[in-house]
Image (cartoon, rainbow, N blue to C red; front, side, top):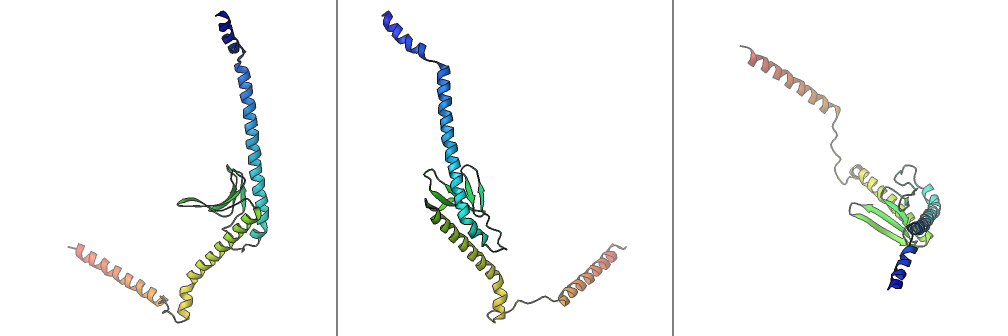
Length: 186
C-alpha cells in the first residue's frame, strides 16, 4: 500500500507551475508569431492588389472624388476603394470585394487570383462612374427637353414680379400700421 501512495505522489511532485507557465508562454509566442505572419501576409497581398489598381485609379476623372485607393491596416486589413466598398483577404487567402450598405455587408466578388479581383474592381469603378454621369444627366435633362419642345418651359420669375411683391408688402404694412393707430386712439 505504501508503494502505491509513493507512485501517486511522485507524478505530483514532478509537476511544476513554473514549467507550465514557461510552456504556455512558448505556445503563446508561437501563436502570436503565426498570427503576425498571417497579418503581414494579408497586408502584403493587399499591397500587391493596390499596385495593380494604381494605374486604373490614375485614369479617374479629375472632378470625381468618390474613389480613393487607401490601404488601412485594421483587423482585418482593408483596401478601401470608395466610401462603401473595400477589398480584404479571408482566412483561406482569397480576396474578397465587399460593399457595406444599410442592410449589412455583402460580398460582391471573391477570388484567389489577383488579376480577376482587380478586373472586378475596375468594372465596379467604371459602372459607378457611368451611374453618376447618368444621374447628373438626369438633373440637366428637364431644361434640355424643354428646349426640344417636349415639355413647356418653366415660367421664369422676372424682376418685375419681385418688385411688385415688395411694393404690395410695403402697402399692406403701412395700412396695418394706420389701422392699429386708429383702433388704439380713444
